[in-house]
Length: 231
Image 1 (tube, rainbow, N blue to C red):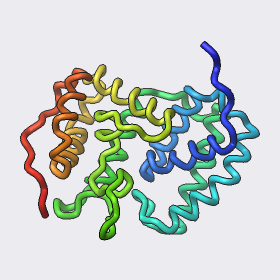
Image 2 (image 1 turned 135 degrees about the vertical axis):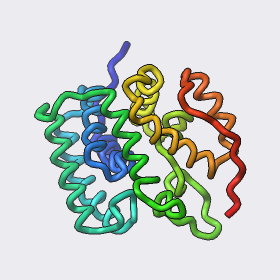
Image 3 (image 1 turned 90 degrees about the horizontal axis):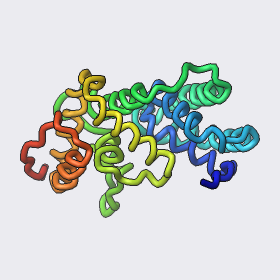
């Protein structure tokens, strides 16, 4: 099998930038994402490309996070600056292997927890979901969906993330969840709540969810009949 070429600085920049989206503002999840990338694609991450990409990515990420209410950043410049600074340090420590080794199960749990924190947390029932608004006439996309669960949408439903590296991350994480139910027993209630909330607002997706959970052999999650949300 022919080895893939090293990433260009533009490709590394895109990886780094998208890592903020999938970490959902959770630094532990961000750390696990970087560890996943370093373990699985480290031979394609050349130091010079990373250095050049980082110089482009960090200012861009800080600027966008400071302006938008993206996940837990809340459009706060100080929080955005802190998050970008922490991400910079996490990336370097993983590449230099000064962070603890990557753990597949920890990443899976982190993705579920980040989802739960962004969608449910300690909110009242009428305050669930992400702080996103869809303008009149604007097309619904995943990053505009208030009730999007990354683990359900990109994981259970296997929807493309637009980057093969993150597709692989979610595929591996869902496989871990399916194959090791005893390890993720403590995450069952959170995962069920994420699934319930997603299907409550996307009842038309029930058939693909049933198909995918059956394919994965996941029997621990219940699928009641949902009615469409009209309010």
